[in-house]
Length: 422
Image 1 (cartoon, rainbow, N blue to C red):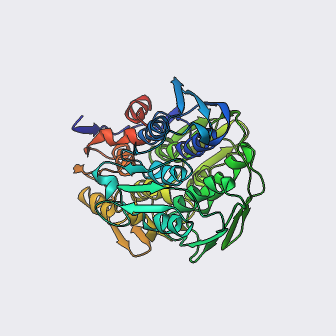
Image 2: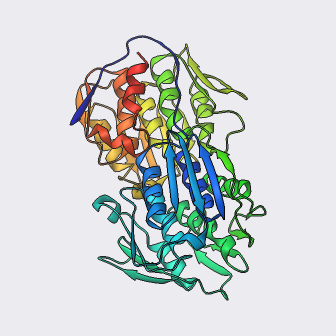
């Protein structure tokens, strides 16, 4: 599709929405299963581009990976890695590109990690510099700190501590944490700046423990990973909390009730707390051992909020904010300018096209109560902008989303879900 025309709902919701498995958990579990000796089976694995890119890379490394619906079987073990030179195709997947760069350093390279042009523009320098400090050979392609990059191990076994910034992306740290157990002494990571997206690092530690490496210590500025080996197992992926934010936000915008089964009060993902943000805005929330339900029957009000730990949901909240009765001030998220798009400037520029009073600043954005009108909005090759603009269209007339297929990065069935709300 070239564009998607979002028709407003015009009535309160009453819907149950099944969301795909968490891509964040899935990619971590895929790495752990790939490094574990023997066969693992992962269930409820999502089918988005990020996950498929990881599977492609693992197959390129020489591992047997079979998918049957939402079930993925992997024959793991570093000893199974194919000797280089081999190209590992990360497509558009930033998470995959960063994780697989670290994984490649364990194998008999050289391996070339590459992606499509938009991914080549995304920053990778902190990861590349950290790996070089750990003894890995890093050879840059077109531009230092970007893809393509050639990676060749081994790690220097005498290095057991490395420093890196924590204020750009937690994915660099996660990539190194996932491979650290395979170093003789594990690894201690010293953060030179405060860590952003800390809940994602907690997900990493939880998945590592589930695959047989407990004991990861998460301090404010020091992360310690013990030596160990992952153990092959069966592992179920919980529903994606970032994806669940869209239908739950639809209830906030349009009124009525939306329930997401399986996203329980025991969820690993920090983004599962987004329902509490909607609660602060005036929604009623029930999150228990069965799922998450959001309802709105009264007025929606704006809030002031630091979203450093909910950064993927900034565009989602920005889409809800125009329908509130007062200002919404989002801060603590200046680092999301380095995502698939500049998720502050690009987001606000597109919302203004639709008549939304939205202004970004170095640390976040401010959205005033507005009445959105007909507009064609660009996604800037960013799945989260596309899905958030769809929410605006549910509450306003005439929103047209360009390049709607970009949602396949995380939720290929997103537009079917939107229509199903009707």
